[in-house]
Image: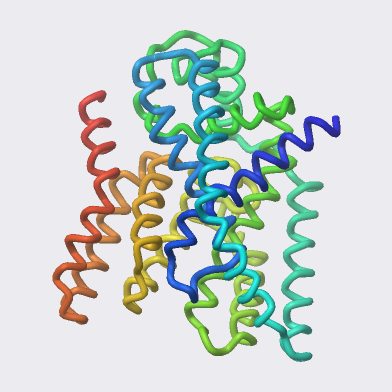
Length: 345
């Protein structure tokens, strides 16, 4: 059991840190932090999975072949990115040492961290079977047991041909990969581990957003996180609210999109609005677009509208017409997968 947990920890903690080293190396100094490394690493893992596994899905190749290929590639990339981005660690350490809180800030930090820990405990002990598990978790299980991807209907097990609607968003296949590598049942991973892990990732994203909103007021960053904690705790006004999805469907692509990808996109919009985009930031925006497709097919069509509209407004206000071209170049994945979806449909 310890071996299985260790393998799962390597896949979800060590690998993201390694994968995030290289892109963060080329970001602006003020954006470098261990949280950004871990966050960027997850996005890199999702993006590589999208690029590598979707061709296997479309060509109706076996699940085992796809995950073996991804395991080898992600392992090589992790070692390579760790070596090439090793200079990122000293920069993150310097920033971490400089962020020494005063007494008042420490009290707010303690309250925020306490609330987050309580949410993680509730997510672990009070998790229940969500209705959409009949598709998401069942798709992961079906892939493992039939050695296919999106071929067999998870509701009743019949071979219904390639499911084009979900084929371009292989998030359930990623969960099945975690299960195959760690040896832990995918239902346990989704309900007892990923539900906790992605909540941490969500607050990590909002922590970066707070740093952008209050670059010189560290106390206000933690007040911002406190407000968000309260918002999420009491945001269950509907079963379809993003806050409800964050706690009850955390491992599902339709929950990852509003609670991870949308805040991440707005974080990058803040970078764009402040003209703080360097090579690393532009590269990661391209990767984030791939990740929106990875989570849900809805991201193929909604994200380009959001980003292009924001880019046009900023280009007019800041008199930077080239910004539209830069943003358009980052949206190539949405265009490609949108055309592929229409072609396959």
